[in-house]
Length: 305
Image 1 (spheres, rainbow, N blue to C red):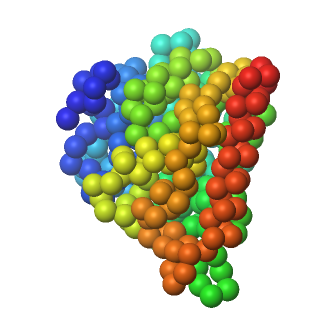
Image 2: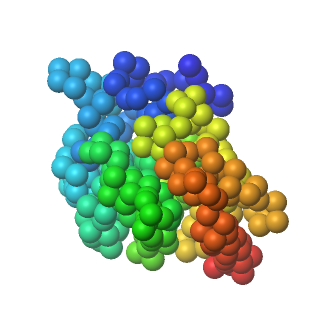
């Protein structure tokens, strides 16, 4: 099925083995549409590598290299260097892809090194907020209060106790010319940001929010609805950092946010916040932190930071 306003060409083919309702599969459709035919992709081990390349089959219709969990950024650096030596660096796009486990954690040092060196490629993270391929373990991207197999909720635990790592600003601090957050619920916005990142020279980054029905425990038909609700509640604000300056896309008004409780109630990973009794204190903490974070983003954009 074509996505309205986007190129009809499909470079991530049907027939892959992703779960029904997989947000990351939608993310890969958007990434490959934005990359286009003249591209080379490298991807870490993870959900989307496993489901897309069971020997002897592949869902990829572009040149694609599978690397270890930690090194898609390093492989992309090598490809970029080879293209430069061949005089083709302006003719072929280089895209590195990883899940949040690879991007926020295991491969972070490789990304940091590549961005510090100023390598010419785009890194795309399909962010489903846990290590979904290996058993739904918590990652640096897992949000506060979420229950995973390594941050289980219980009588003595609220789930993950730490806030989500701010990878956007970490990479912006590496002097990346373009960093953006996007969501599969807003495909036109995501496509624009991916195209901008790919067409911007230097190391660029797009964090693509991609809900996981299996790991988050929600009905498979609710993926896009939940992704949209994450933006409407301010859980996942969409914004860009262009040459160090913030641009807010949505939401851009703290007073217009939907209550975060509407988002939390959609997912089994937060069920313990409401059973056997509602955890008012923890939900209020999440709500206040969301408002504080969005207020800060808006303030930075208004002041030209």
